[in-house]
Length: 199
Image 1 (cartoon, one colour):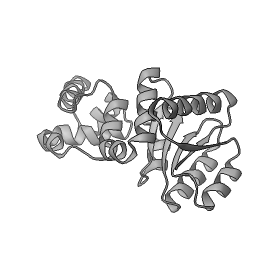
Image 2: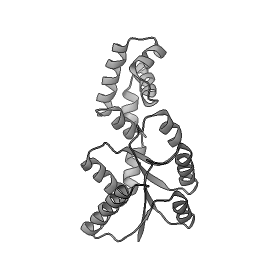
Image 3: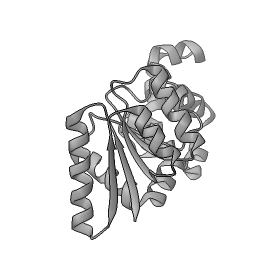
């Protein structure tokens, strides 16, 4: 039986995620043990006991220190975590926080359909989901020009067009054209989709 752990300090989020996973489990005949936590210390205690094969965590409401502690603890216990946040996952804080972590991060503003499909695949097709979302498509990467690669790295660092243009000594308009080409090659519509595809 697979163990699924849900963490959030917000009752409505805990209720929604638990109901969603129970619905998926019932519809597909999977047997799951679902645990729900609203206290980070209790969650860490449970993970210490070897539980929580799959963790879905809502980071909102946690201090930066607690977020760091949780991600570090998850890495130490070799747990892969699906993280929800209302913050921009491309902010420098999150990029630094998630460096080297196998976790997957999603903004709460994504469509309900996209969130539900992602949660389903994370829980029930876990290995395939993580492989798909953590592997850089080398053929796409190799198709980027040197200039596009430079801009690509700065985009993922969260820099604006203006900041990128200053660093590379090119115009804002040139940056925009290169960004459009990068999105076209990766078949993405925005920065979040691009980040999720290559991380």
